[in-house]
Length: 346
Ligand code: DOR
Ligand code: ZN
Image (tube, rainbow, N blue to C red; front, side, top):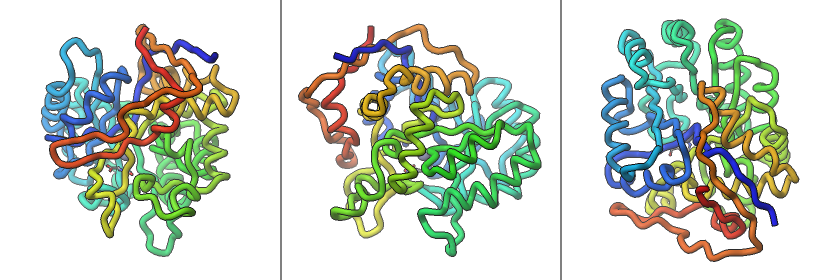
């Protein structure tokens, strides 16, 4: 029987939403993870250190007392960011990073203003503050095929920025292709978060036997060979790749609609999904590096002193497969994998 101990993991890419949804989902992340890097794509987005501090307080209000969960906050990049405020948010510790979304690429990114290449003053301040730029790497050029969006964005938009600002530290979020893995490997200033769903599914799962809204996310889950490249990068122990669940809850009303909302709720079972990927790859000994060590080092932390135990079993009754919230149900990703794993604090 496989049983391993790991330092308490961190989630380096998380959507917690607000109001009723925040209150329904926050406990799942707080139970599992030490830190979570919280994405700013609310409506309106988080664009100031005061917004970030207030949002952090609303998150902590939803977490059990005694929990050691720490939300780390990000700002939504735009040409209108107040750079003095960014400096003070960095100094006070309330702002950990800035996230760039291409306008129109994903949930609420229609609020973004300006291309990556136009944000020169912001890049200069990020370098000065030694603060990471988080990038949603998708070209929204209508001439680019949806499965090539990541590769084209990296080539056309991120590569010139890396060249111009070699000291800028960049995280390619939810890397989803072999081209993305190659890009990270070719650029020492760039690392990547990787999601459970991009590691565990391929586009055939999304599209081949009836389209599955619950597997629709951005960037869209790509080909089998892309998935293989992600699994090799994540399981190989390379310090430039680490877990970001990109847990992004939407109600089933929003998912089963003519225009399907992008996002997968995997705060509940994402860790089990990743454990199963590592188990099947024969790389369970590298799981701790991926979920508890590599990302922590990138964001300036030692691994947690707390530990969790993961034990693989033939099968167990998972119980919950759907989250019931005040605004509708949310389908949980990874129930099949969760049936093989018991996760417990030590
Ligand atoms: O699938 C996604 N959902 N990708 C993103 O980049 C955003 C997220 C969300 O906020 O729903
Ligand atoms: Zn995301």
